[in-house]
Length: 449
Image 1: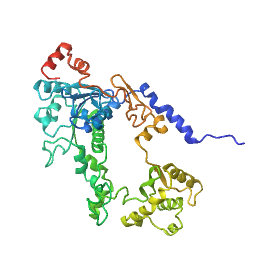
Image 2: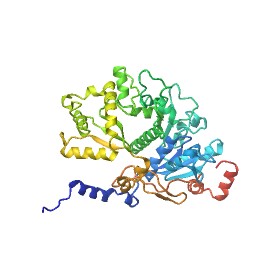
Image 3: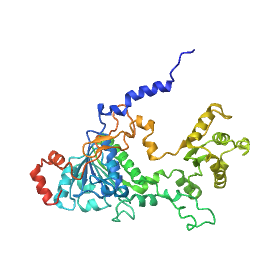
Image 4: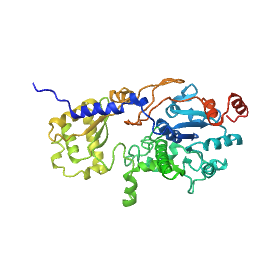
């Protein structure tokens, strides 16, 4: 019997795991541990998400809330609160020191100005003009601290016809304004009305993906500005409008209209740029099917036993199948076929076809659609540390998505989940101002903190 030879990929998996295993994150340095970040997010998860990315990389992040806490703490399904904090904010309070400061009062604004003088980054999500009204805009703060990187994430941007609208940035509005939402949702067949199919309307992507996108681009802009500051010594202002950021994900639809004047209409789970590409029913739920090449589409027809009946041998190009009429025709023919199997059975058929099918090793990508429970119990993600509970000293064991990427030298990590409102007033104000308990009580009495 021949000696068993371990696959090269397995050797690599062991090697790379020894270098970037998230269980060893705390043995490694943090990439941004020399940065001080002030997060003044107000009613917006975009700023909180942005500062979370920086905090996970080690930045000393100070979350500044009004006395009583920011409104984002109330975001939670069914109003569920854990020690005064909604479940959504438990995701985005990570690694941050939480202080309170009343910017409606001059003394509070003076304290913020002094904090900004000692900070590297400031993130704010107030309506355009609000920070300037308080004399806390970029011009004022950069005059005191020229190295400050000041990131504004708003619903309309810092300039433009609508920039002065005193409206906070709302994810749902940004999704609608981006143009992306127009092309999402079920098809409204010809001759049908919304009364017939009330669900065939543009669909919100959730949860608050537009905020997550603008927060990510905000963090990327901040890191680029940090690099530029290392070269020049100069800070800068970063202007992120959430609808613009989300529009970046519009992909081909923008160019399709600009070049061909064609609007990308709603097409359910199908896509006029790709085929085979969509979600299909199974006995126990559904699967995603991905073909993308003519041979893969032919392979799928073979997998479900329709290669000869559908005359797949005669198919010579994929382009015709991207037209809506053919996609809808074949979707109706595919649905009853995939519904004969469980999701796992279909996925396994694709694996086996790659070994011995008519077009092997070509096969179709088939992925079961899993529930949150299934995802959180998936052995692959468990082993990679995605859902390892964080032992938080205040909130106890909390499961939150972490370790979004692995790194061999400076990996992100979640050190604690969240803090109650004003939890770190004592620590932060002593460190930056030398304020002790007596001074803090005075500030509290005056409703500054």
